[in-house]
Length: 415
Image (tube, rainbow, N blue to C red; front, side, top):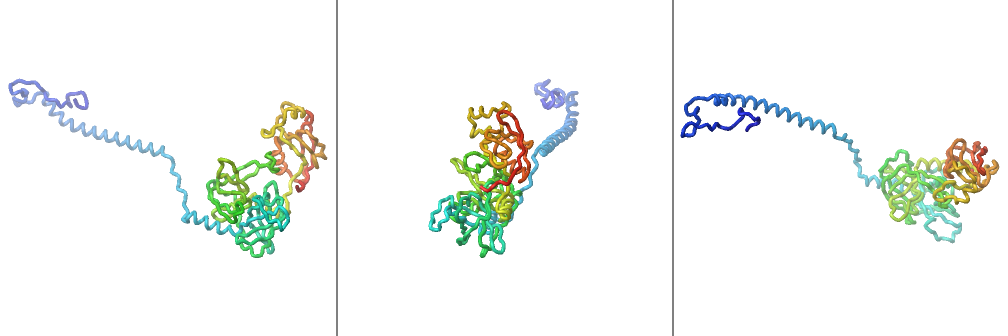
C-alpha cells in the first residue's frame, strides 16, 4: 500500500498465472494488458505528483518553521542593555576614594569629666568625625550628638596621630548631629560633601571611622536601602518618639564608627554613620544620616549654635500604644466616648500649653485639622508644619467632652 489506499500507487505485481512458468499472461504474450498500460501511465503521473507534493510539503515545513521562529521571536523578552563597566578596577576606586577622604576623618575623645588627671576612657567616650569646612582660623567637624553628649572636655585625633582640643559649636538631639571646631593650622584636607539624593540601590560605599577605639579603620559594602525610616527613642526610655530617615548599608559600622564618613566611590561623603542594629542573628544592618539632611542641620548649628523649633510644652503618653498600653482603670478615668481610640494623653502641661489651659488627662486628638494619633505624630507636626510664634488650634477631650483651645507656640528651650 502506498501513500493513499489506491492501486495507482501500489507496488504489488499481479499474481494471475496462466502457464506453468508462473508468469502473467499479458507479459508472456508480449502484450500490455489494460492494467499494465495503466501502470505505464502511473509512472509519469507519479513523477509529476511526487514533485508537486514535495513542493507542497517543503512549503508547509518552511511555513511551520518560520512561523515558530517568528512566534519565538515575538515571545522572547526584550534584551536589557548591558550595564557599562568602568574601565577602572573597582577595588582601585575604593583605594582612591579612601585616600581622598581619610585625612579628613578624625577620632573624637569625649572626656566625660573635665579632669585632666582622669585618663580612663570607656567605649562610649570614643567616636569619629569629619572635617567638612574651614576658614582662616577654624576647621569645622561634623559628628553625632550622642558622641559628644555629656562631654566635659573634647579632643580630636587626626589621621597622623596629632591630638587637638575641640570646642562644641552646636548640637541637636533630634537629628543626632553636632558640630565641633578646632584650630585650622595644619589642616590641609577637607572632605567633599556629595548629594545623597542621587544614591542608588546597590551602590558601593565605604565607611571610615574609629571603631572600638582602634583608630583609623576602613570597611566597604553596598547601599542596601537609600531612604529607610526607623523609629528612635530620643530619651532612651524604650518608647519610640521620633523617626529618623537613614541610608541602610551592610558596610560594617561598629561602636566608635558613629560620626564617621560614609563615602561613595567618587570620594564624596554621602552620609554620617550613626548606628547599627546589634542582636543575635542580625548582621549587615548599619545606618547613616543622609548628607543632605546633615548639611541643613550643620549649617544652622554653625550659624546659630542650635536648631530653633516650635514648642508646645506637654509631656504625654499615647492613648493607643501597643508597647506601653494604658491600664483599664486609666482608660475609664479618661471617660472618653467609645469612638475615640487614638490620641495623646497629657501627663503634664508647662509653658504655652499650661498658659492655654491644658490639664492632666486631657486627650489631644487634633492640631488644626490634622489628626494626632501619637506623641510621634504630635512632635512631627510641630517640627515640620509650624514655626515659632504660630497660633495652633488644639482639639482635645476633657472628661468626655470635646473642647478647643488656641495656643501660641514659643521656641523650644535648650535641654
